[in-house]
Image (cartoon, rainbow, N blue to C red; front, side, top):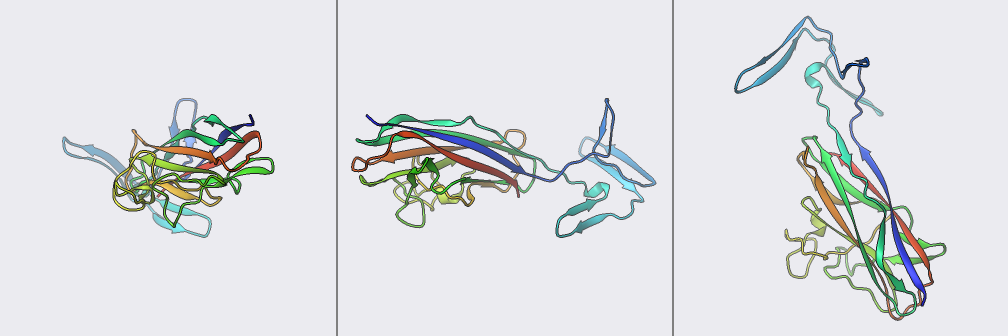
Length: 247
């Protein structure tokens, strides 16, 4: 038997607003400050107010390489984070002569306090994504412009693809509950299969913040070597880059 092992390697990126600080010691850190002639913090059972008096040079400034929100009241900072799942080994191993299917899963959790939400995108570092030296599995080929409702690989092919699931999954991966993806609001388990690309593909997004609970997107992985193709023995790997962006 010619056994084939499939390993998915993960690389993460997050993008958010830079958050420096203006003063610190071993006991404290001041995130921001302002020059003014007065200020106060007021509160009641129904509200809380922090204000300043006499600030100068406030407002928004932008350039080709920067964006500044100047002034205490303009100090709207946000943060975003993404989990780092362990590398995934698809199972079972595939016989290179008789063929077979191996599956796995990777979960990414994105947490942000950004009021406009976030996007989560995936891409592969190579084309095709799953390779072993000069050998490879082709990227999955949906029948049309939208993902395939049912995973389908010809007997003469060896292909690798994915399907995301989660509370914020992109509309491209929702289905009508019957046979069609890219429409409706249903997430039928193990449906809507797509191909990785070397360009980012948005798999999840939200237009609201979700801190502190966050939102998890589970990405189902699948590779099939058809019974009519000989796939060379080896360890095939794919490096997947996950990028979380604050909207």
